[in-house]
Image (cartoon, rainbow, N blue to C red):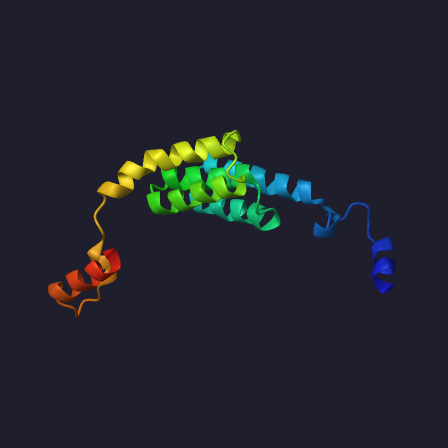
Length: 144
């Protein structure tokens, strides 16, 4: 009741509140901000805006595909790109006629050769006090 009273006093020149946006308008705003950030090569900012879109609509295939492309081509992070491509395929319902699913499968195929030939980064698995034998033994457990 009091809230309605305060809203009635709001000036027509005041800034629009978040409550006045529809879901579609909010998604469009974040999409625009992500596009601008991508054009300016501010990839981490773009990923933040894309994450906001996906929080509002987890099935937004365009946003998810943009995340995958950003990881794949801009940030050169094949593992994150692959995981995101797989999410695109899943979110599309594994529909082989869906253009996003088709593009995601192409991205996965492009990355398969990259991931198979890259060695396991042993330095990420170890702390400095371990010997090489302990590191290799732990890596074999992970791989096997």
